[in-house]
Length: 426
Image 1: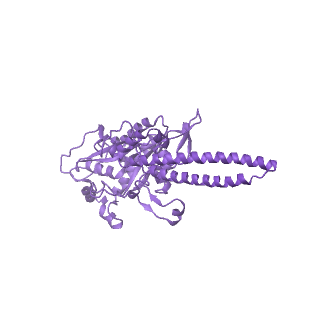
Image 2: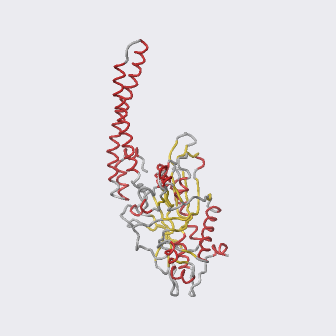
Image 3: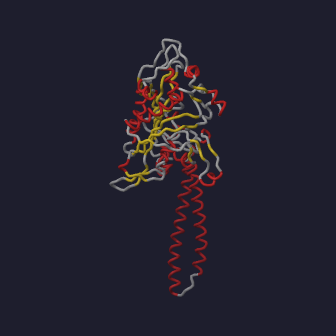
């Protein structure tokens, strides 16, 4: 959520920033500024009346002490109190309207982010390894997975629907191996603390990280009458970013505890609304998938460096898996709703002849922290400020499986996995 005070002080900067992501969303800033002017006017009038009421209370006390009648003052104060109530109600109403508008306005891009429409601003900033060219006619991941008996999209479609893969035998074992391999690397080498979190969260958690209300149509919601009365409906998580970041919702952390580094495996659920027919073959785009997530709660002074370290942690997994990849700095038009700066990691698939995104490493600044009220207290001054949050996939499994099958197959259709995975598969 954007800082209303900063928005009020520099509206053109924020309008330009929001427009870089969504020109239509920038219209909401003008609406907020008009409402904010009304709010400040009503607050000022209410405060003036409250001061008048306080003065009258003093006059009433003096009149009663001297034995004089205070009826006329009391009658006048009844009308004043009613006006104060009306102004307070107006302020409450406009506060809700401003909050609703702020909830659907995206974060503004970091100064390093190229401004462009759609994917036009994306820039390759690093490559690692050489994209492989097979010396034989290879099979794409789905044909090969079917031939090996490891992957079945048909079984998933039968029991659930399209976009829900089922893994059998060595395919299922590969899932476990990848999860354990990634968690071990992040906890033992990169300093993250592992968490096992629920895969269902309440509405407040989804609002906190920015998935709701703006992207609600892409989420799987679970209606529950009892929950609806208290917090609204539940949601299946689209990523472990949601529960892990919300571990710290409404907390005020000690400065010396920052950064907090957390990792966790969860299943993830996304409707992928509006993507039908776009890269939907096999594991390239599915509705349920496994992912190991990296989350950081960082100090504002160090968050940009923490993003670079986060990126390096995700890269280390790909390097250990010997998968050629490239790093893209995303332009403003291709970033997520909450991100201020984002790197995508893409791996080459030699049979499909495409680059597949396997991780997005994002810096959110204080955007999520404001929504979730995650703060810290500076040790020297005692001042309370909002933390900065970051997260990245470390990594998402479906496309890792896809690229492993395409990069490590031989001409007989057998898979020779990289050395780093062998102890997890033995």
